[in-house]
Image 1 (cartoon, one colour):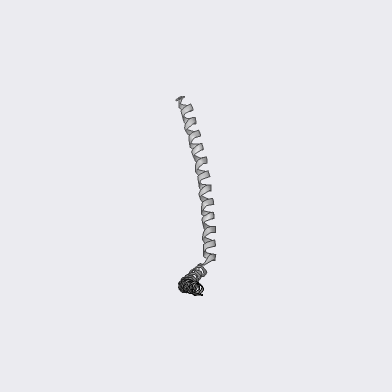
Image 2 (spheres, helix red, strand yellow):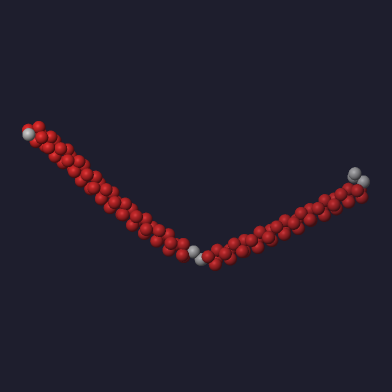
Amino acid sequence: MEELLELTKKQLFMQKIISGCLAVMVVVLLMGGGILVGHMNRMAASMEDVMQKVEEIDMQSVNETIEETQKLLKSVDEFSTAVDGMTEKVNGLSDWFSGLLGGR
């Protein structure tokens, strides 16, 4: 009977230790959850600020600017083509003068 009582006391002691560990784990999890909720609230507020900033962007102006830039690039391309043509004509004229003066 004494042995059974000693065994029961040891089991009760182990159960107290396990219960204490579980209680500590629950407290840690609750604290971690509270911290996580705080971070999530701050992140949600930041996302709302970002959404307000995105909504403030005038997309029509951005699109108009892109269109104007495309027109400008097309104009620059046409100018470059005209300059290339003029360069070819000047080279041809130079060759013609060289041939006329007997330089070649």
